[in-house]
Amino acid sequence: MRDLLYKNLTSLDKKKRIIASSETLDKEGLRRVIHRHFVYMVKEAKQQDNSKPTPYVYVLKERNNAQQKEKFFCRIKGSMYLTQDNKLYLIVFMHSLKISLEAMPNPVSN
Image (cartoon, rainbow, N blue to C red; front, side, top):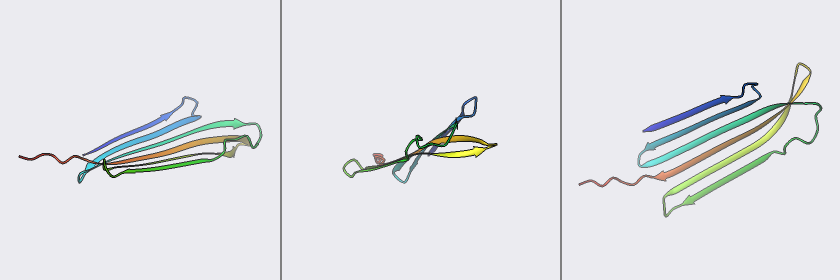
């Protein structure tokens, strides 16, 4: 069985966008849950300076053999400048990925 959920949200002024997806897959005695999340915001900048957010990367991996579970999480934050029509914009973004693997209990047969 596979369940998919997808969201694509954009603000009215189109300066903020959120894209998210979630997927659950049960196959071969293993449940996989994958969450993806992407957010970006666009701001007009007066001049390029060093006050933009610093890049950030976070990775976490957990394994629990007793409960037969494994988790992976990664988050990346960053920013960049962009020019269009002689205007300077600051684009700030965040992307995250979360994966969970879990052994499903075996059904009892009579």
